[in-house]
Image 1 (cartoon, one colour):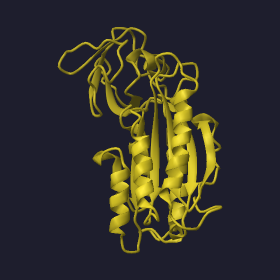
Image 2 (image 1 turned 120 degrees about the vertical axis):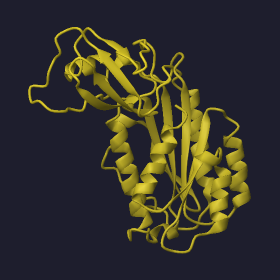
Image 3 (image 1 turned 90 degrees about the vertical axis):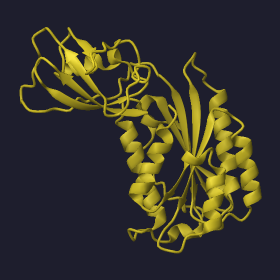
Length: 298
């Protein structure tokens, strides 16, 4: 999970906001902070209440949440930004750093005919999905945690197809078309997409185990219509949720047309828990749903 923290150099008064991963340690970003001129080599990190932070401990174990302030005590000459002014540290992924976790995100996208309908911002649902996924992948590629993620994409209507097999995030073509109706555009049978996602998830968890690095899968399911066989869909979801390392997040993608209560209820029931379901309406709410789904529980 990404945390928004504020670093305050108590010697210079310089304040910087930065996005870090909860599984990183202060030491893991120290070199970047030095290169960006936020600190020099001699420093102590502490909280405003005076608690000194262990630089070898990860942010989550330090008990830090988004909005926390970390104060920097620095007795050496401070490195300054030659251009002056405030500069955001570029705490990007270090290609040489080891993985801290290994997560597969499987997008399961409804490609039925109704995905041609309009969203509340008057663009086709299929285009909103395509845009939201591209934006999500671009943001994650810029994250310091980029190397920890892999993705796969499943499209479904009355059958399921594999748009993108399990691929490391940094190897995914940013120009890939994620329009879910390509090769589909028929009826809605959600269980076909879930079944294919289950196969991908189990294969990922069985392969390439790397020591003590935690592995997990998040199945991100989007649908906008009523499933033609909800009983089979529910039973498929129940089988998937037997694994503690697989989580299902779902969204009912509404639009300008009237909502479908039964379809929305089904999506709620498929989700791993009440916090794993969201109703979405447009590109922004979709992107936020995708991001929240893949950030929870890390």
